[in-house]
Image 1 (cartoon, rainbow, N blue to C red):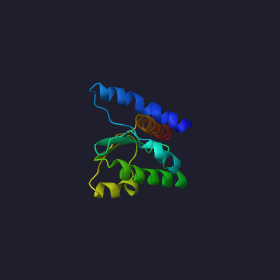
Image 2 (cartoon, rainbow, N blue to C red):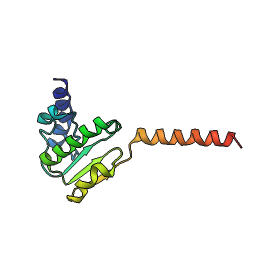
Image 3 (cartoon, rainbow, N blue to C red):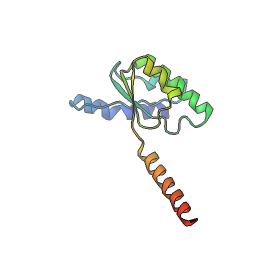
Image 4 (cartoon, helix red, strand yellow):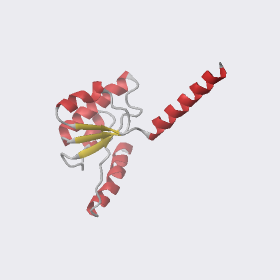
Length: 130
């Protein structure tokens, strides 16, 4: 029930914006096959959709759920473009690129900050050892 409610909330503002002639990119979220029934509802076929792999592909089981959901999403929505606001590994997205779907990767803000802080910390340690 909570997943359905969250999907409803995720669709309400975009529906209103679209109804007021404001272009949006719908964000598509799913968990496992139980969510497919409602996760892809209300999204027009074709066009552009947004997804994220953040927190979804570290563990083997989670990666498989993501792959299965992405495959079902592509089959159901048939997007022309997928915007991923996180990392886009080739083993996940290469087959969709071959199908002619444009895959756009936007660097995730949280990941960017984490990488900068990690890099700065390493530089600080290296400078202290000289």
